[in-house]
Length: 420
Image 1 (cartoon, rainbow, N blue to C red):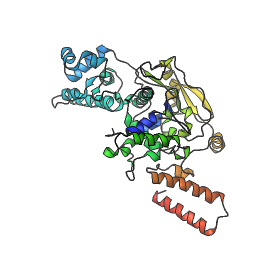
Image 2: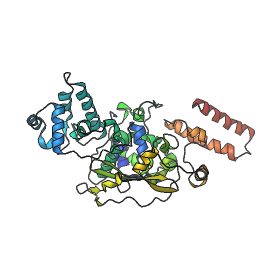
Image 3: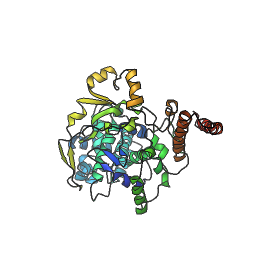
Image 4: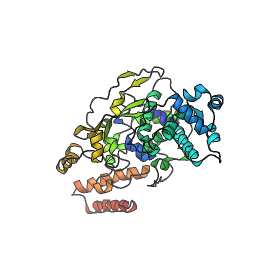
């Protein structure tokens, strides 16, 4: 996880979060963190078994006693009964001391490490020094392998809920995986990226590693927050890198087309990609009605914030979004077909991409759009310049010979440098 965070930048984005739609409301429209963002930024799977079980206190007490090698009396004495089960959990330092000793079996070292990763990195609370024992349910109790859970969708549901509560009045703290949030901002908004030269990405590790600038993030300051607010007020859609992972993001991560609710234990949040189809490479139309909760209290303050969505919306039916159409697919039938979104004829898709939903991409040709995305402000704006040059060469045959030669030479140099 990132060693430091840009708190003014995070605060400026939190102020634009709308919990009814789970999107950031910008001057040019809506944008949000999607399932394929979690997949690419954190390297977590976003399909398969949901993290939906809320374990009982007895189950957690037994699992915690075994993991920490303490009796129930010792556990209550050293950790505190209420703090462990009803609060934020066990002191992280206590977990390290009790489980990472050399004489403990390797299986305990392994599970403890995963416990710390889940509770201390992906599902952070506001304590900063405690880790909740609820993850021991998946590590010790459940029969499902830990790698078969959809931790990506769980992280996103938890992040949605934390953004919703943090957007309320008089709230000055935030929980959740802030590495995901800050890296997502850098991916989509080149103007906010750190000026650290060319940030490279290795294909075998999560993309978040490319944006860890260490101690490069400035400290909190009201001046920076005001500057970020003013910048967001005047932001245009041309300044957004809508497809940071290349075209057709849903081809690699089909689950990103799912419309419904995502879940993390008792937290259930709506996931509506039909409101942000520009992040899938299409032109945004008027979105349908939002997914309404059964019970909801979203006042401006935090104390009364509560929202309940029906749990069956996350498991009974999956709605897949295809631009121009939508339909339901029963989960069992989908698994028998091997997963993925249904396909339609090539003639219709050709018409769709050309007239109804043309691609929204920083570059013009389909060949260029399949390359790795730009990583710096310079690369981004050069990509935009190449788009203008390509259109100029195609649409203005009356250009002088010298002007055309200069434009073609510039395009050739850029393609050679980008290894296109």
